[in-house]
Image (cartoon, rainbow, N blue to C red; front, side, top):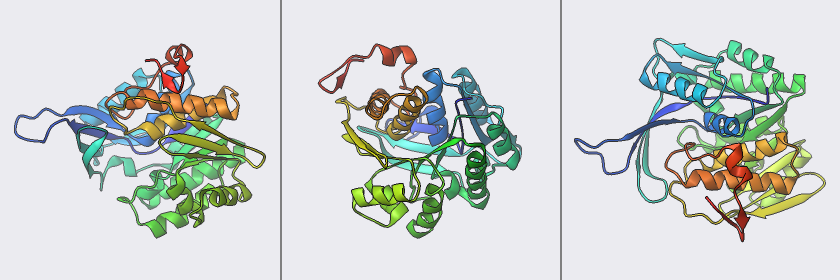
Length: 311
C-alpha cells in the first residue's frame, strides 16, 4: 500500500444560486483526507481511506464513489445512530460565498482503534494526516496521536497538512495540539499563518527553520502563486501555474496529493512542487473539491509553457 489516510468526509449540497423554493443544489461530498486519497488513486497509487459514515444516502454515495475511484474503503465503519456530516454552500465566482456545516454529532467524529490498526496493518509507505481530524474531538485527537506513533514505530513516513479550521477550535488550543503533532512527522504542509500556528513565529523563514530543527524532514510552504520546499540541506521554490479558476476549494488537498505522488515516484524537490501545482491547477478549473483532479495519463501529456497548463 502506498498511502493510508483517515478523517471525516461529509456530504455536500452546493447551491449555485441563492437558496429558494425549487432551487436545485449539486450533490457531492468532500473531506480533506478523502480528497487527497482520490487525487492519489487517479495517479495510479494504491490508497486506503478510513473513516466513519452514517447508514444514510450520503454514506452510500461516499463509499460507492471512493470504491469507484480505486480507493480501499475496508477501514470505513457505518454507524447506525449517527448521520454522515453535511456541508451546505452557496458558490459563485471563485469558491464559496457562504458555508454551513452540520457535523456536531456526525459519524465522522467516531474513529476507532481498530480502524487505525487496520490501516497501519496495510504496511503503507506513507501515512497522511491533517489538522482537521484532531479538531473534531478527543476521540479523533487520540486516533491521530495513535496513528502517528504507530507509523513512527513501523518506519512509515508521515505527511501532515496543517489545515487549521477556526470554526472547529480556537487558535490557542489548536496551536498546542498541532505543534505537538508536527514534531513527530516527516513532512509539513502549510502557509505562513499555519507555520506561525505551529511555531509562534510570524516570520516564514524563521518558522521553517524552527520546524526543521525540531526534526521535520521537509517543510512545504505554499501560497496561491508559489510554493517552496525546505530541508536541512536545501531550499527550492517553484511558481504556480496560470489558470482561469472556477472554484478554488480543494486546491490545497490537490497540491498535497501531487506532492505526495512525487515523493512516491522519487521526483526531486522541484519536480514534486511542479506536480503539486499541476494537480492544483486541474482542480480549480472545475466545481467541487476533487472532481477535476487528473489521471496519470493527463498529467503525462499536459504541456506546461510559460507557467500555463494546456487542458
